[in-house]
Amino acid sequence: MAKVVEVGRICVKTRGREAGRKCVIVDIIDENFVLVTGPKSLTGVRRRRVNIDHIEILDKKVDIQKGASDEEVLKALEEAGLADFMREPVRIARITPFTL
Image (tube, rainbow, N blue to C red; front, side, top):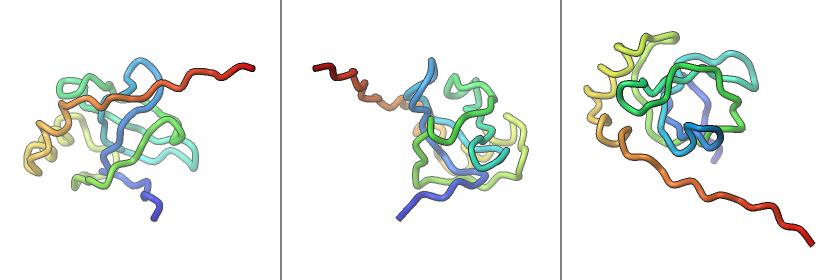
């Protein structure tokens, strides 16, 4: 079953300097990009546009409004008891190019 891209869904960044950190989808920009936030005070992920191919969507979700502020996201995470879960980084396996 494919994971649904929706506002409030928790995901892990798989590319870039924030790879391995968890974030929350705040808005859906189009079919390729979403707006995510950590929030930065909790996970170190600042609010930014991210390619959907560069995140791994998890099965956890928080109840937030579209375009919610970092403070609202943080409050929702604490109410859901997911603040400690969000702080734990995920180890991303590096794929090295294979040459013959």
